[in-house]
Image (tube, rainbow, N blue to C red; front, side, top):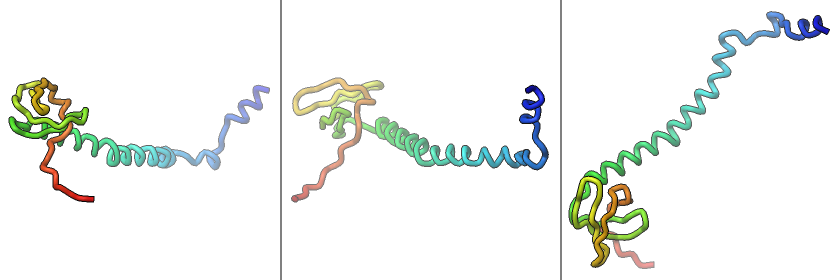
Amino acid sequence: MISEVYAMGTTTGATNAQGPGGVLASLVPLILMVAIFYFLLIRPQQKKAKQHQDMLETLKKGDTVITNAGFYGVIEEVHAEYFIISFGGVSIKTLRNAVSILATEEKNTTV
């Protein structure tokens, strides 16, 4: 039985054609998958996060913003870690990261 195991484990040069080129060929699909994930998922997400951070840094008093909860408000005060936003007579202290986007003037469109 042991001789059969040795016989199964031995390979000849003709059947073991993998070598250094075979290892590289088996890594190419993995490298391509990583590159695709980077360019389609990771890089756009990093770019979007940087744009959002830049937008948060440029907000000033009087800007109309939309929070993550979907509320429109006007910035009354700007502090290092939070804003005081007025929502039609009610002022609320809101973290900077809770501001989703800077609301631009919307165009009136009729359906």
